[in-house]
Image (tube, rainbow, N blue to C red; front, side):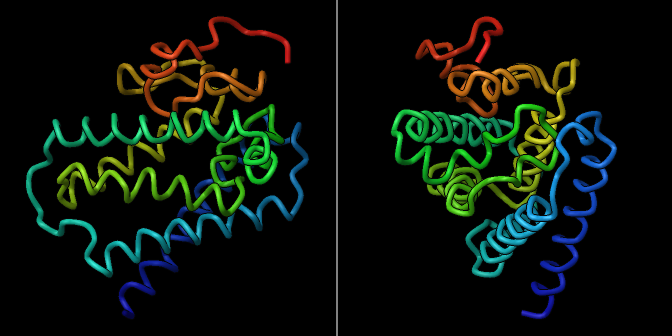
Length: 212
């Protein structure tokens, strides 16, 4: 129990300080004029996120075997995550009371900064934690190395999409930063989080920039 507690405290502080540094030095930081409530909410969501993964490890919900990573399992896991995320995200936008209840917090921002990935309602944070970190485990057998790679890719890509980078993501086929920025500008469409597959298939991809 003590090692898990130490892991929790160190992880929360490292993640918070990292994203705080990225946000403070970001070009949009001065435009946002972020208040203390913003940083407290982000810190709280980081603590919930780390606590979630700490519990998964502690209660042995993740395969602890250390093997060479399975590329096929990692790809399938990411595709499944994107599927669950797309339909959940789209439903939240299509059902007014859900959007009003907990999604508007994240959509307060038009000029994005990296820490915005944690500036969401607590309920929404828990939902997305389950989508990314728990539900796919019932379908895709991953070992600890697979799981670490998956979550590193997801959090790095999430911070990239909120960084307003003009360059493509380091891995091919992933959505770029402008893709998610358009979602914030328009308020709908581009619901996918990793790949544009579902947006293309369902016709919800924003083809060009529009005024909100």
